[in-house]
Length: 247
Image (tube, rainbow, N blue to C red):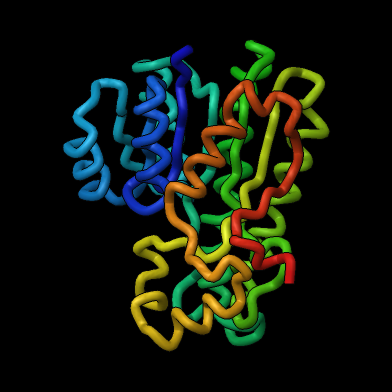
């Protein structure tokens, strides 16, 4: 059965992989990102009328409202929302007292506020249908704090709590929410680290499976938890980390 799926941060990495996979499943996909060139490249690659590129910054309410209105006019309201857009905050985002206030605000706006805002926006239509799934891409950093990544760790932990709140408040009305918590995944965001042999070995030494995760690892998990096969999975935070959290 074809669904309307909204994926944020869809221009590259995990988001692009999610959009491509849901298209392959036969869904109608709204690929939302502020990177217009990246979305255009994705559209060229997939060449599918079931893909709707939506250029919007997840921190801009007006842009989000327009994107949601365009999506509803084209496909109908989302039945699956994947909150994937995120940021580490860059090199300035380190320990709490050393991170500039404006950088903290940006990390909170992208990683947390946008998740709340978009979830709230899609919930009314889901409630009307008594059916819907919200998949939040959190991080293992939301379960154990990453050193010198205070804002990122804090926001990802909060995303997990948003996931639980949705499950508790709306589970009895047919809506599920899951938080996926990837560990080290090979994406454009992590290439700078994984491309350095010494740093790559340092990362691998902390992962029991001794392998780096792939976009496919996260995409396949998201597709499963968004499906009816996972109908009794709700409010959970699922690590995808090669055993990192088991140590």
